[in-house]
Length: 175
Image 1 (cartoon, one colour):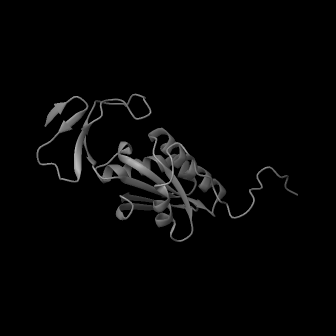
Image 2 (cartoon, one colour):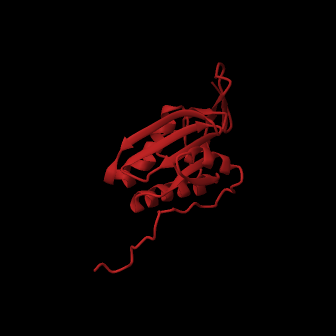
């Protein structure tokens, strides 16, 4: 492998992938733990889709807007806030990718669990903001297709809000 500044070139890399050397700095500008590493990343756009409306979290990794690369469907229950980001990172890593190769995020907006949607949308919006990639929210059975088609019109830095399916009565007194 031959190093050249911030990029590494490797002979024999698959045509749809590239080796990249990112040093010790994350996209947010903070230092990573451990040594710098050369990793294999997708050349094509990688989109992460997140659905957290119930105790079973659904994560999908798409190449472009149509090709499903992998998915993680797991019952996390009350551990959603603790596990969501690491599950996203594990899904990316299992597919020779990383947070740096995300080019868009699709988030399920609801209806569903108030807390689950808030956690999922908070993580998705934060990732989109930190990585400066577009995020699209969608609802219904075809939420991934709807969200993928909406990514083209979204600007990086814009956030997505939840659709709870009713009013959130979090500040009303119980009787």
